[in-house]
Length: 274
View 1 (cartoon, one colour):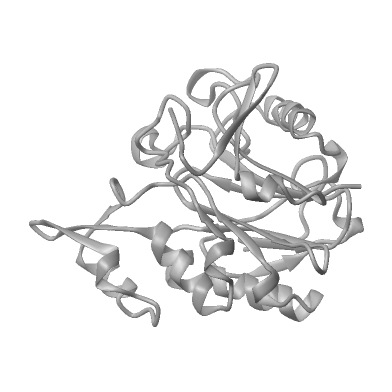
View 2 (cartoon, one colour):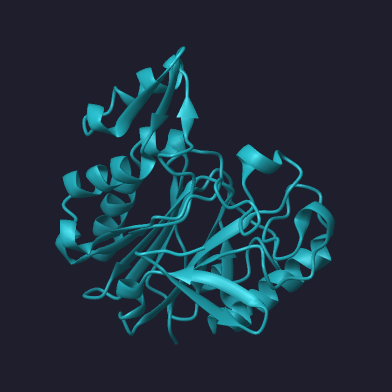
């Protein structure tokens, strides 16, 4: 698999994807996982970073430990979202370290995480849905969000910009945002009900949809999220869009549309260096 917009990083058997523009920001680390380099087996092989689909929890914890080493972040500082396809966002603080992985979560329905705390890694889980990576080098803040079609329809990208402005005084024009590997415009097929909801968005353009006939349509979630970010004040030259479709590469990525519900989960991660 090749990409014109992202770089493949490798450490030992672990492989993950990075945006070169975000990698140039010296205050953060970030990455989007692949299936490679973990200890899980069967339908979860091998880098499963999800607890909810039946894998051995001990193996999942070990996968997070392995991935933390590859990303060069503190395993004990990892914090996991609790997603329900909404737009609720949590500010993560030092006392949240380990929640969702080595400690129980005391929150529910969180699809976005933001922080200014060094040593904390924000994590959202994915299996075709869009990961959004946010970095503000002026205020020294980061964010990580999960935006499937429901999250996109609810403008999660805009909500993240707003929350970073509220909590950290982020200027949207200072943000760098990566729209990561997920189901692409080649494969995200919907019917009339979903298309009707998408057309409710202020930022909708008909260029984002391709009519496949017989009541089937393909929607470009990447460009729709890009447009939402632009409307929220993020500079066009600081929005970086993947060209990697997870459904097209089931050998490298867990994908709900190919593997169904008994599968592993991928993860998007971003951290402020200590």
